[in-house]
Image 1 (cartoon, rainbow, N blue to C red):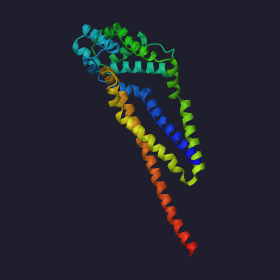
Image 2: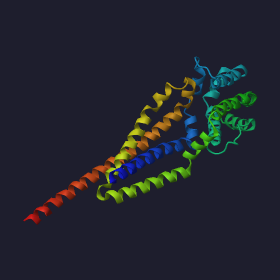
Image 3: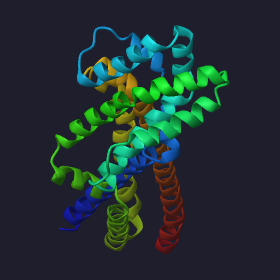
Image 4: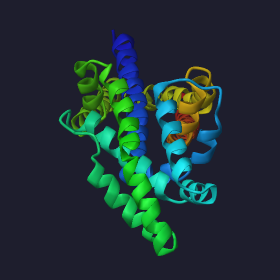
Length: 287
């Protein structure tokens, strides 16, 4: 009975730590500062160059580029796509959609006034002449419906999932569930200590090592796994986000693995030391 309870508690530790690692990595990914940083890492011109690609998202993206190319010179279009403007627009859309998923289903699509304000502020920093600045702002504002269409496509894809499923995801990534996991982990560790006394550490850190190894393998193979599962355009668009998630997952996994192995090694040394002290005492008693 003692072994069954210990095994169950070890499994609970494994499950709690695994979920905490994945959830904390996801929370890091959807921080506002992280989204702005990762949006800046996307090569927006590369996304235009993808030809053998179908899908509404890619179609809307190309439509925006073609519309700008019709009204502006090629140099101006390239300068726009190499500026911070596309990354700021991307961050705005991602933040709005993450707010829809994690905060409120009543979150509306980004409106034209928000796009106009963002464009005006960013174009001002790009060093265009007054004539070019007004022209660029006018052309992008005229095609702001294409930017809204991009978000609408993303919203429709998200809305294909049931609200029950989205609420479940929202709960999993929320603060209360993390508190529950920490409480379960703490209770499981205390019970392991009570049940197994001096030998409780292996029952805690072996499942912790298994959890960190699972997370480590996930971080190493996530990109290559998803690359074959989703369209090239979408993969290139979210690659920086996936890479960041994998890197953070890798960091936490290695940290947990290091602490776990170090704790087991220290426990082994202490156990060996206690045995050496105990043996001489036994011999003295025999004499």
